[in-house]
Amino acid sequence: MACGVFTLIGGAVASDAKPLNIVFVNPGKTGEVYWDMVAQTMQAAARELDAHVEVLTSERNYRTMQELGLGVLARSDKPDFLILSNEEAAAVPILEAAEAAGVKTLLLSNTLIGEDAVRLGPPRQKLKTWLGDITTDLRTAGARMANALISVARAEKWQSPDGKIHILGIGGDEITPASIARNAGLKLAADAASDVVVDRMLFANWTQSEAEQVTANYLSWASRKGIRPAGVWAGNDPMALGAIKAISTAGLVPGQDIQVVGLNWSEDALRAIRAGRLLLTDGGHFLLGGWSIVLLRDYADGCDFATVSPRIEVKTAAITRANLASVSDLIRTRAFERIDFTRFRARAGRCGQYDFSIDALISSLAPLEGTAD
Image 1 (cartoon, rainbow, N blue to C red):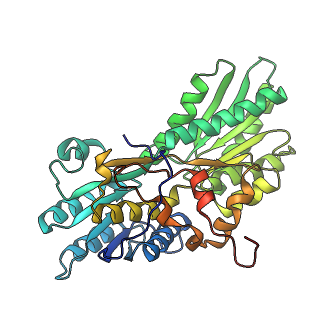
Image 2 (image 1 turned 90 degrees about the vertical axis):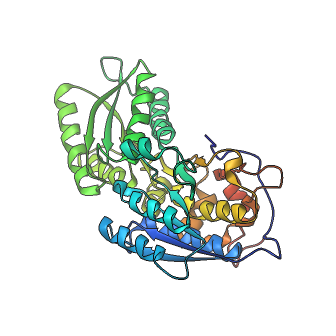
């Protein structure tokens, strides 16, 4: 599997390149931060790479998502590419219709799973027009988050009387691939550390309020059992912020008495990191939107990403106080036009080799207006 960590690549759209018409069927709701940012990075990349992205929003209604996708394929003037996300396996009928219509598709964030994956196989096998998918390695993210908690707890000697480091895990849910992968990363890190115990793996439906409640319950339980809680691992930022609120309510100081980690690169999480209440937020996966346009531009220009693999897996990265300044303004302003997406294109002879790392992202950023070069 290509994992998106190669030599930084430069290049520009060739002067004779064909303008691309791309449609993205957004599975999220209008105003849903993650999916809005996916669409915004797509459109920023498209402006630089001679493409136009039309965004159709499903409003978290998967029947609507299918109707929108099938509607695009029924148009007399069909797009060059269709970008879908296979949330709740809703993309499969659209993929099959795209094959019949001859429209090339790319899956973003969620690919085929279960019986669909078995029946249809990998990209470009049964469905020739399904070019591939671009996803993120959330298992590694989950493990990195856990290892950060463990490292601080060891350094601070936050062991309980039993000599173990005790952690609370808060997952989003037990069924979606993105949640399962994150939770597996926590288990991977904990299983590898003989001095670590995950006391509870609880689920808070991705929400701050439910995470606050389960954390309060856990802290009460730990106090009764004589356990010294060392960390809270939360599968997204809202749940991490809920945990922080419960910790403060319990009379503890988050960041001093106990550490918390989250995932999403949200503006609220960045503020908590700056204040010392949150250890890190992993993420950056909203940039899959921009990276998808890079892949399709290269493909259209004859540099096929499938030369390495039709499946591109991008590593997420952790934002901590150490690198906060380099990306906080980008996230706060959503000024994604500051990213020089042309620098991420593949060079001739190195098709399919991409560096979508946080270091490459930071080095591609134009300065904010009004700042010195």
